Length: 462
Ligand code: GLY
Ligand code: MN
Ligand code: MN
Image (cartoon, rainbow, N blue to C red; front, side, top):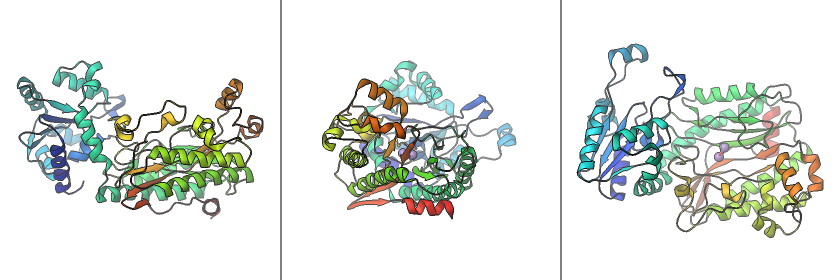
């Protein structure tokens, strides 16, 4: 974990942003895979990690905004726990490592909250996403499970989003640590991208590298020649020369910070001319987007600028037609680029999505569009120095979507349907990097991972 003073500073800052009352943070519990003792890899709640840093199940914490005190609640391990899982310091000792002096057993949490409720004090909490925490909030606060999310505190949501959105130097350094491991994952994937190999062989190796880096994968690895499916988690195919392999993966550091990278790799190490044409469009779109990043610019405007690069590139290769501005305005490009340009990155790969995408990526100044494609844009609002963004445009040939739109005659003025037939088995191309918004522009984080066709081809062939 970080130094105690970092957690103290974070909590003190939050206290200044909030009105009166108590702030309740519930940590996560173990989550069973198929029976209680056989749990998934434990992942602490990210806001709990951010303010309290303690990475074990069964904890909760309260910040008393009026008395300016922090309390961590948890039960010390019994001898039986130690026999099975090894020694763990007491809750008090661990709390002191994050600058919290006061601790109590879990059974003391309920009475503290009850007393506050009886005095009419506000109890602020974030929207829960795990069923057990919804039930805990019901037991602790008497709120019906179906109403718990709606009763989350807007003041706390806004304060936490504002605070966690601006990454400190030590957080950026953590993301770069995640990227260091992710670099190894990618050069390994590229070196393995030869005909005859199975997707699962590469996926197994790169996931292993995330573990060897001291953490785990930040999200389930996407690694497939069926790159036209945006978040395809199957690794069932044997790869052959000429396949395009989309790899969207990232490591998570032991402190919980994520990397999120995508590269598209030609199996056998040579892009075909048609693949290269499309690749160059995506690359140009991604580089244009990165160059446009600076404080004060709306990410939606950069998304739309990227969409125009994609549409004009597709027009140049004969797959789109007509006026590019108009095509993008109407959303015709979304046949090929149906998702958003990117999202915030931090302790979560889609940072703070649990708290509410509407608060993270949108504000009073910008509403979510309902247009297909643009509606999926996770981040639309103005960029600020300290934001860490993913930049991840793509071009995909999704046969079911092409067929549907063609049948409906949708955007027939902008899409050259007759020329799309030979792209049906093309797959997809996405390129993703992680970018820090700086005071005067941007910095692409991490050591550069091969990205131009030439560098990728070299990385495959060696
Ligand atoms: N890795 C998931 C995403 O790029 O959003
Ligand atoms: Mn990704
Ligand atoms: Mn991403």
